[in-house]
Length: 233
Length: 233
DNA sequence: CCAGGCGGGTGGTCCGACCACTTTGAGTGA
DNA sequence: TCACTCAAAGTGGTCGGACCACCCGCCTGG
Image 1 (tube, rainbow over the protein chains, first blue to last red):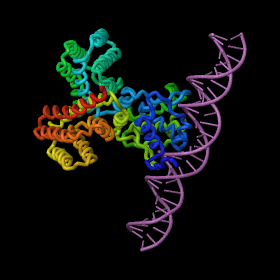
Image 2: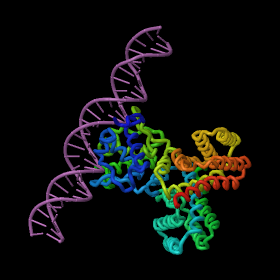
Image 3: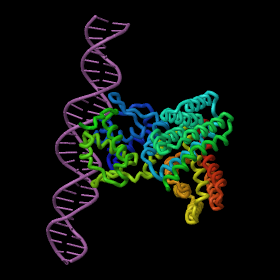
Image 4: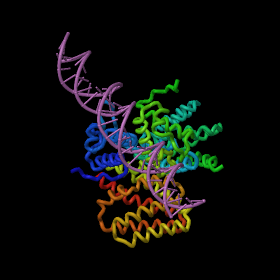
């Protein structure tokens, strides 16, 4: 007989748990190829449709990687893939939750800045500086935003914690930033952003973790306070 | 003609983006019911199977809520539902990424403790104290763990940031904690945990944010350091 | 030996049917 | 009149099969 544990909500849900278990227990290694959908369906004792839905669910989470015509593979299980959902959260959040997300970001961003100040290499510091310069050299909002994001991404990477960097990346997703910024057309906003970025860079260059933490917290906190006022007002 | 935007990878992926857009643009409000799968399939110009896969994907992310026999509804879009993925990440992570996750948790947990110290009410403080007492009153590891989790959950809630609490909940998921603890059978581990929890509680009772931050950081950091040693060793 | 094509196998999509569950309201009995 | 029952309609859940689009490796012909 099989293991005969047919309970557990829907059939698809069971399939998801089953596959997750295979990976968690190490029966499936990252990069390894899974049986075909058809075989998997037989193994799990369900139809291909249900199996497919389970695979789709895991694919969305970044756990699996389905390649058309080739097969299904276990994802790299890297932070970036797994936490992609985080960007969706940011996209769909509004009102008070936006403030909460920004508060989380402030906490993590300042921690990352402090770590980066202690660990950053000269090469990475140069990259940070390059994005800062590029951001100051143009007036195209789109380009500014692009370098703004890259600036923060570089710092997060320098912190040496890929997971933290991935979370911050999701929290700073393009649409999120764009939406927050949309209503902030005050002319001094850009100038203030430039000043704050410069302060962060100085702290990094000085290898001063506490200064970096404070500068990063102030940078995010400034936006946070502004948004808080708009939401509660 | 239709809107004629057939690009975008797979059909299912397009459906996911389409539905996400409906919600992001406010065409669908939380709690509202969506058209039936069959109607939705017609609207999107695709088969019911593909539509279902898209719905499934969004359901897994917590964006939608499909109720058998009733209909499909837009989820509450609350932090807890949306960030369930964090639990999956914690479950599937191992090796260096576990350390990274713990580092993220340390940062957030200490921030939450500091916030909680400033904001916690007497009722919540009593609840924290109750879990602390219950944890000290038993030797059943399972029960200890249960109150341990509740202890931290209560503090995270008291911090007043539901999103942060949800993330911490995912990072502290049962299997995650159990797995870390599995190898820590040293007898003094439990005693140490109790001491650390007591220190956190004292800081909360004193409404001292900095002490709470330090105590929480030390608590998580202790586990973190131990795990770091095991991974790198 | 190499280049090209061609076929088998894979995931992607579609269809139609049926099952399981929830909801609703008409009917029935007290 | 009211409350309860239960049956029918509508919904998501599952199934099986068919076909399409794509990848890859073998095999053929040069």
